[in-house]
Amino acid sequence: MPQADPHPYSRLTPDAVLDAIESAGLRCDGRQLALNSFENRVYQIGIEDEKPVVAKFYRPGRWSDAQILEEHAFVLELAAHEIPVVPPLELGGRTLLEHGGFRFAVYPRRGGRAPELEDRATLEWLGRFIGRIHAVGALRPFAARPALDIAGFGLEPRDWLLAHDFIPSDLLTSWRSVATLALEGVARCYERAGAPRMLRLHGDCHAGNVLWTDDGPHFVDFDDARNGPAVQDLWMLLPGERGAMAASLKHVLEGYERFFALERRELHLIEALRTLRLLHYSAWIARRWDDPAFPAAFPWFNTQRYWQDRILELREQVALMDEPPPAA
Image (cartoon, rainbow, N blue to C red; front, top):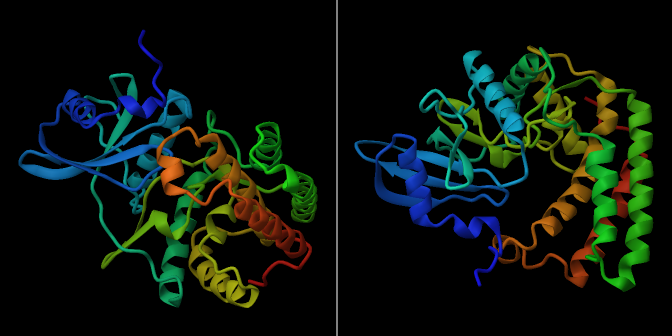
């Protein structure tokens, strides 16, 4: 009897990838390179007599068609405002394509290197473009995509981990206790900040999603775009040490606020958003543990040492969230 696929990507063979690209009207030359991506599958594909393209195959069941198309529309809107992003190609009048049971999008290839986040001019430059992204993002909210909030990034991941027996039994009480304290600290940060203005964000704006060339930065991978507070797209570019964070934040805001004003009360959310990301990240890996790519990429996950380190990390966050925010 035929057996169920051990994972949906098991059917995404090299031939299936090339067949999908050719179904979109492109002629492949046979070259194919898997790029670094875990949530989705991303490949550089050689095209006959043309520059290579990048194809992203969306993880089945993660986003609806409407949510993916909102991401595409946002990036196309940013590109129309001459903001350096990489929008999907329209092939046959569509940006979201389907073949063999997989939804995918095709992008032009854009290279680059990591930004030098210790450089003042680089931070100001990044700030200018993020400010422009947010000026467009504030024009209207996402309708289909979810928001970055305590419930979705904190309470639900904590409860999911507790319900699925990933935490070793001898550490369970300690982890549950510190996770509860951490979420209480997050709630206090939100109380100090007040209800933040929610706008369309990149959502995962760390240095790995910013590619630098001689012409400056361009922003890639809007897969985690959602409604959220503006500071979410700023804090991941800052160092963790308090004094260095304040200095870097000052430089980023010098560029950012030429185009969009940050409400200073949102600075109370920096450590809260970091805490939510830590909880969400552990649950994200755990949810994907049946994907063969994840045990290979994260061999340290779900070990005794991993959860001990997460307990210490959350304890540090509990203390940091009660400190004043960095002065911009």
